[in-house]
Image (cartoon, rainbow over the protein chains, first blue to last red):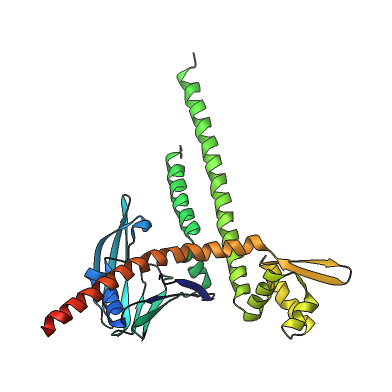
Length: 156
Length: 152
């Protein structure tokens, strides 16, 4: 049986994703906290990206840094772990943007299955809208291309 | 044959036209982004209330008057009018007054847009979690095998 992913905007600033795994919380937690395991699932092929590097210092105050390659360019995602409770709770910040979210992952084991709840809390609803809409991101790229066009056509 | 000077002029003219077209594009795109964001804000604010979500569910089954809705949700007419007003402003509901009765129905197109927003976000997580699932399954099997080995 395939387990369902639910996504809900809990409030203007928060998105919550849930999913159940047929495994003990211990193993799910490992997959989130050991870089060699994390690397194997965080970037599915359908994203059209690949992970160049992945460093994770999973302890309170520890940092993480992920570098992605997409096409000819790359981008980095980084932040700090705020809470680390083995097998049940992980909280980290997303510091690559000023309006980055705080991500909380909780794992709840019941009868050999684990319910995963992941919340992304943004500082403002604008930040959430901007982060969540692929269309808006595509617009930013389009703007960048237009900027280039404007520079190359500036004849003065 | 055109002189080098007039050739240069026509090139400038072409570039100026392109520049103007590009500027217009930026203007339109800017507008679209702002419009989309403002609309999403209104829609999600409208959806953040449990009564309003109930009203949408209800209207998904059948059109209803404000009086019907007020009865069903045990609210005053004024209270329900406010909720419907918020939904209407967000484009999630349309209303039409015939005689003395104001009938409400779903503004479906809008709902589909919100659903599409969520769906894009969901797809990323479906893909990620499918991979995570495979990995966790692998870890589980490995643990079983290791466990057996340890017992032997």
